[in-house]
Length: 213
Figure 1 (spheres, rainbow, N blue to C red):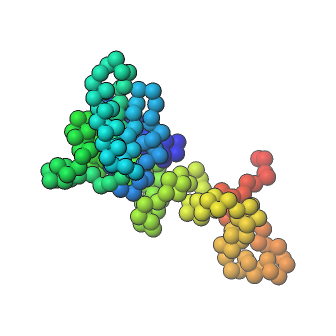
Figure 2 (tube, one colour):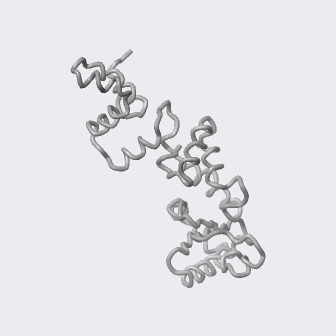
Figure 3 (cartoon, rainbow, N blue to C red):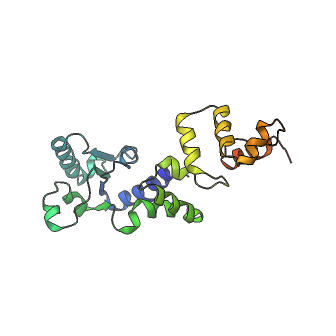
């Protein structure tokens, strides 16, 4: 399961179903697509990214409809691309905090921070996940997805996938990563680069061995 699917199906959807009404605060806009994908029959998603006034009206109307069983509305999710209010003063200035008070909010505690979610999604790869967060404050979903599976170098594989290079270009990068001694041997024409290059390619998930045993 991808990290995006894990967050949507294991965190956002169950919390929304339990509470009926939920506000997702997301200053990095990392979860916007996930929230919008939850819209369905009986589920209204209000996106406050573009027009706060219109989104307030839409959220207000949806909340009223939520209390009327004949409308068939079961759940309301309000997506807010801002940091969650932490103090009473901040809550008073936040037009969407009332929806969180009526139901639930995300994030709600340290367990909802991005690092914690990634560790929950890939519990067997905690060391690599933490290393990625040390290198980059907010690793992309693609980068997290490339952790594990017996492969190495998730950052390299993610970059290659993004620019959609051909296998020849990928192999060239793998060759570049080989030890200097191996590269000099290849330059001399002895062909000793083949094995190391395939090994690096296999580790990066860019090459599949033709062996069948």
